[in-house]
Image (cartoon, rainbow, N blue to C red; front, top):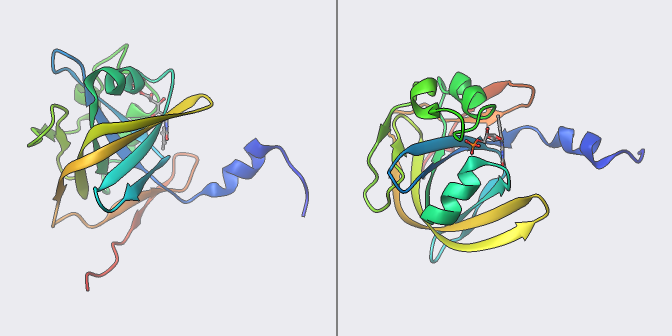
Length: 170
Ligand SMILES: Cc1cc2nc3c(=O)[nH]c(=O)nc-3n(C[C@H](O)[C@H](O)[C@H](O)COP(=O)(O)O)c2cc1C
């Protein structure tokens, strides 16, 4: 064993889940970013947490709009992940630039991602400051699944994504 910089150790975390975080401004203009740092945090009520950098446009939109969608990307979305994860919605409309298709959510303003394995409609319930990121915890007020999606993508790092097969249902 050898001691290293934390950065070097953190690069060995892959594979990692990825999710879409979809948010909207007051006029309904939508923004979307991929995030690796996220998790379910409660069964009852159902809660999902995402960790968003202070400088992300998504951060400002969740702070003001207090709602966001979390979606699990499926195969075919690899290019959109790279695109939306390297540009800011402050400067451009990433929805049209990425080619992602959206549809209205049922309970919140930010829309759902067509073709994603899972879409979770979240209302902001809590926030925790963690250094240069904020953990936004959303109560999941509605959930949707895509029965025909082959499974969700995993991030293997360096822009490499692969399919993770869903566990067989019991
Ligand atoms: C695979 C991947 C995972 C990422 N994970 C996170 C994350 O967990 N949290 C975060 O704040 N940014 C993450 N990012 C970076 C944001 O997606 C990126 O900064 C994005 O441009 C922010 O967009 P926005 O300014 O429109 O909100 C990730 C990027 C990629 C490509």
